[in-house]
Structures are given as C-alpha cells and as structure tokens.
Length: 149
Image 1 (cartoon, helix red, strand yellow):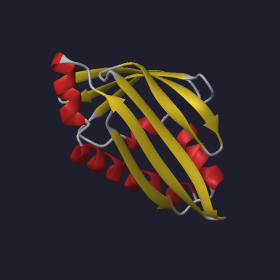
Image 2 (cartoon, rainbow, N blue to C red):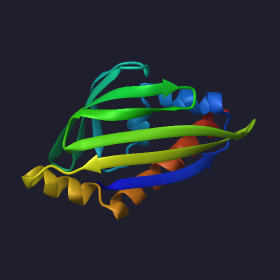
Image 3 (cartoon, helix red, strand yellow):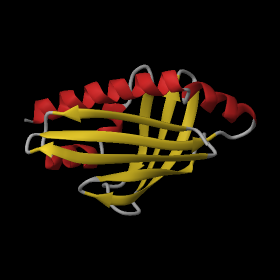
Image 4 (cartoon, rainbow, N blue to C red):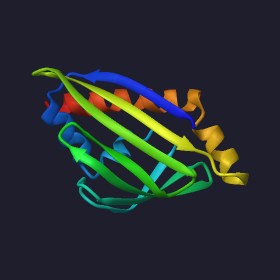
C-alpha cells in the first residue's frame, strides 16, 4: 500500500493551527492551482463530520466524500468514503514545538482502483505530485497563519 509523509513547521501556536484547519474554507485555501475545488457540503470539523466536494483537475472531476475521524486539538484523519481512490486516509498531526511554533505532520495511506481511475490516481498521487501539492499546502498554511496573527 502506498504511503506519503510530509512535515513542516508554522510560526503559530497549536490553537491557531487547529482553528485554521477547522475552518470550512481550509480545503479551498490548501488546494493548489490549477485544481479547482467545488464544495457541495462541508460540515464543521468534528468526529464523524462529512465533507462532499469535487476537485476539478482540468476537465476531469474527482467527486469526493470524506469523513473525519480521531478529531482532537492535535489533529484529525480524513477518510475517503467515496472518491477516485480505492482507499485514502490522510492524517494531520499538530505538535507544538513551543508557545509560538507548531509542527504539522501529514501522513497518507492510499490504494489505487483498477482501470481508468487507477491510472488517474497513479498519476495524480505520484510522489512528485504529492510533494508539490504539500509544498504548496505548507506555503499556504504559513501564509494564512501569519495573516491571522
């Protein structure tokens, strides 16, 4: 089963990081262009909350339903209930390093479907693409958290 890990720090306390990720607009803020996010329904982050959205990658719509698990001030996991992959679990872990710095660890476990969608996810979720996507997410998170300070 493929996995992907990415870690970075932000100049913000744990409470600010948790608040940023709890905002229902976070997904839009964290999705790199040229991908477009169409939010269908986003419940506030809580145990069992559901987010339904479409990621448009060029002309290709990726319909996604995610359920949030293990929600705490130190992170959460979003689990794909339906979507382009056979399996997708993305765990976000927030660790305070001091009173004004937090490390964010991203861990993804996923599996590909057979056929067309398997080809799509093998391309989109390749290590180089995931690295670029999470580099963007790092910059966006740092930007928005500095802006809130």
